[in-house]
Length: 137
Image (tube, rainbow, N blue to C red; front, side):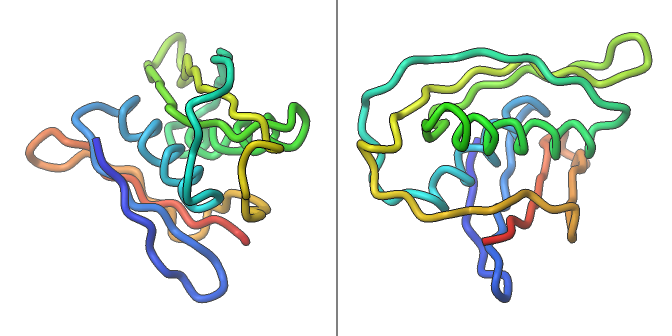
């Protein structure tokens, strides 16, 4: 699993590849954290959550939006993300966890929101997953 930050006009984009869909989601989330903070300390407690959506792209959006919500409401930077994605009963489900580093322990830049702009979530011919997400800064 890997990610790269990409310049995108006034925004920032994260491009990720991984061997599974859940790992691709987690890699984008790790890229989002890297876009907000250069150095991440080892502190913080893990937290878990589940999200559901009608399709994979909506699930990726809702997952990343939930991490931004956790940052804003709980005052933590979600890092070391882990995710499992599956389809169940006609909807897509993610079971995720992250380590929440207290914001007062990092020098974090603001990242306002995840967008659908240019979003790509696709399985490649070799079975790996590709994700590209633009964030409003």
